Length: 57
Image: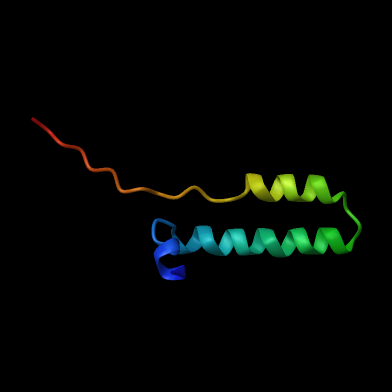
């Protein structure tokens, strides 16, 4: 589900990526190079923060 997919991301990361998507859309409307816009957008995808469990012993 969408909720399960959102786990591991901070709200600030999600908001920043939504802003990046909106900016990319605006750049495409202004006739920017589509490949360049999408490559930059892909670089702005936030990384998921996995919980790391460390076992000792």
